[in-house]
Length: 94
Image (tube, rainbow, N blue to C red; front, top):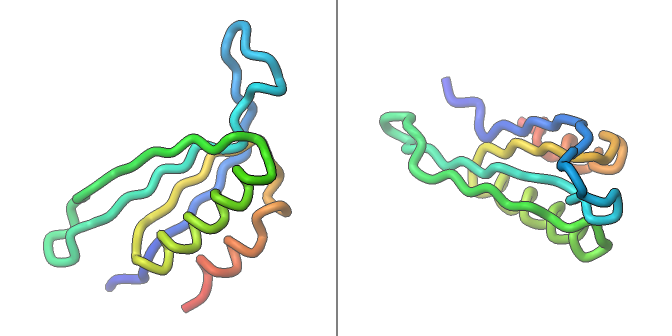
C-alpha cells in the first residue's frame, strides 16, 4: 500500500576541521523519486542550503514542492524541529 511521500527530519551539528560556525550550512536535503510500478529509485538529488533568510525560504519552498510531486524528502539540519513545523504538518496529511 502506497502511503505517499515520506518526510524525515534529523537534527545534527555539522563538523569539519577548520569550518567556522558562520560557514556551516543550514541543511542538507536529499530528494528521492521512485518508479511507481517497480518501486526502485529513479533519481536522487542532494542539495545543501546556506544559512541565510534566502536559504530558509528556498529550503521550505523546495521541500513543499517535492512532497507535493511525490518525492521522498530527508532533511539533516542544525535547526530545531520547531523551525520547520509547517513542513511536518504538510508531510503528515493524508
